[in-house]
Image (cartoon, rainbow, N blue to C red):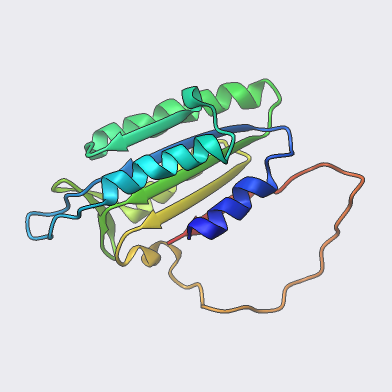
Length: 175
């Protein structure tokens, strides 16, 4: 997963865009979940990667360790506001979202609370970033992309122009 993320980070370093990141780690899930040892540290490390290799300035990175669902939702809302400002200024924007912790087919589990995957997807879709890349490092979080089959399939041809410097648009979820 980190290899794919590094390629995405490196590929867009040369382009003029504003970058933002949210790194979330929570060692605790439900009371019945075995506490994780490294989830919060994973979030710290990804935050550092976003800064050092991804070109995300410190004031545009948010690191949440052991926080509640409401603090995560508040952090997303604040980041949405900052990205809206950058977009109004005419900037392309890129948001990296990383989560490490407990999860199941329906929700991320943070310290006894649950954030439904559908709600996370909705919250991320409300952020007006030109590109959003979300990585969920949690058991069963692949339900977020349910219906997607593994492997490759043919797709329509597309134009690659070296005259235009327009980058990609949209959302990528890696779970």
